[in-house]
Length: 110
Length: 120
Image (cartoon, rainbow over all chains, first blue to last red; front, side, top):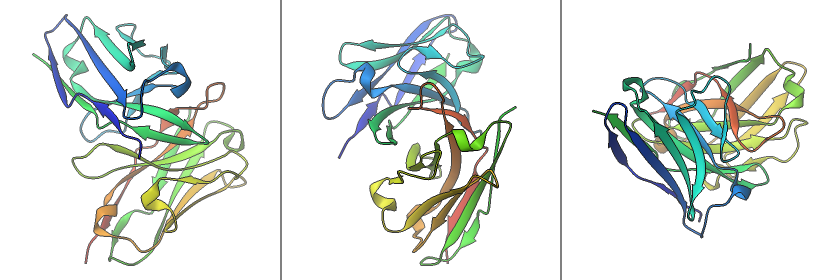
């Protein structure tokens, strides 16, 4: 069974930089897994941030960037703002229309 | 603009069935693959099922195989999820999501979700 792992929680100071990661139980994450990232605040539907590893969805601020760091997918927030305080989920594509989400990272801006 | 509106959620007894729907607008529905994703209370997102734009290639997460059926009616711009033998652990907000076009391997747009509560 494929498990995707994210940090449960991270904190960042306003204006600071934080990097969230997304790991695959079966090995390294690569661009062929089409990593994507989603932001969700309580009571709201998810919002798409990043797809295909590093492409920003329409309207997403440039302070959000995606990459592969070592053997993991990564989402970096540079110049964090108060309204970036949210849960962030990565998803990896397993092929044939199947995707797996990570458990999510709760980011606190303080 | 793209809109996905889910409906059909509610309270259902364990072991019963329920069909939820997602009406799409603002794009050519028949051109896009579609997904269902759920979120149990206080928990993370969980991919449930997907269906190609033409109704082919049904795919399910393990817990949904044999109990859930994803389908679509492209003439009505509507995606469905029929759920049988519901269990308490199926209690969740169910979101429909549209795949991308050039890059299909992600969830480009999301509905607001419909809450399914399985309880006696």
